[in-house]
Length: 154
Image 1 (spheres, one colour):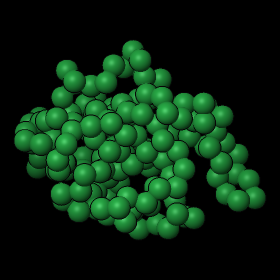
Image 2: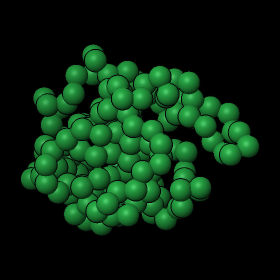
Image 3: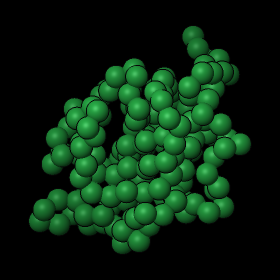
């Protein structure tokens, strides 16, 4: 059984250290906390709509707490933050079926990011992007992203 300490040591080793280095985390003072439940407003005729709060924070630094989802591929330069621990692939959805409780995270660090899914929460701070976008490298379609992101175990 992997202990929390062992998992954190693994996450803080190598390329993941640049993502999970709390000393280099974008200033939490400058970031507005944003909950998964605050991303979307009411469901309209075309499906979920972004909330007024999320739209107002577009292009601004936000911090979100969640869980690392299983990676699309081990060397992906992005990862998915989920509202709760995920055991199944959240990427297997079309744009129309996009889950409302995940956010794609593009770390600030250059190079590949290798992280392991965990039942331990993360706090990620980055610039909020909204709207459909397909990642050129993976073909992964997202609706909500945190870019230029930093994170830390909480």
